[in-house]
Length: 236
Image 1 (cartoon, rainbow, N blue to C red):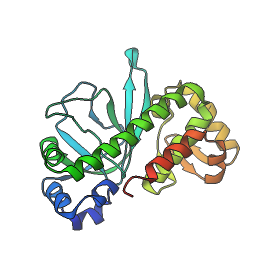
Image 2 (cartoon, rainbow, N blue to C red):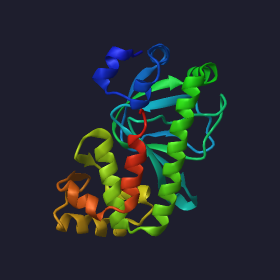
Image 3 (cartoon, rainbow, N blue to C red):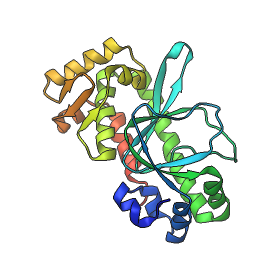
Image 4 (cartoon, rainbow, N blue to C red):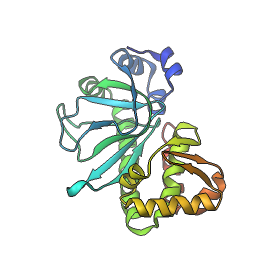
């Protein structure tokens, strides 16, 4: 169980911060703090969703998996949002949710979340607004995956994680980056080497450090700035 006080210790979620205190407290009374490791799968496509997860210090990737093991990230959720919002109890989504930055989440039973959604118009409006932003991110990412280079997308991917958790250092492998970007390992390795040679990052196996954020921003495609602007509006 966690309450408003312990959420400060674990980290904060911006969506929870902007809903009425009484509603937030009801959700938190049923919430469980969970520490999630990188690559942890929260749910699979078509799988009944039993919990809604509010990232606190973690980042969750929504991924479209394909046959033969290929996949590509279509959206990310950090401390601005919610992972797993079934429209009905026992409902499912068409994505895989996988942890791309380890950290903490506040886990709320789906039944509790849906009770608040159906019982309060203000909460429903907030949730609808957030979901519109999330679907906008999915649309932007779909175009980005089709049109922009691996190096530009990788730069945006790293910057997005840094923005969400306020860190410039990540435990990440080339294989996992390839799964998120929908690229072969060799293509990701080439882009990582390009950014490293330019002095924008430091890299060793399983580890990336952001060194020059303005440099990465200059390389990142326009989708990074667009998504960042949209996410900044959550909670206002």
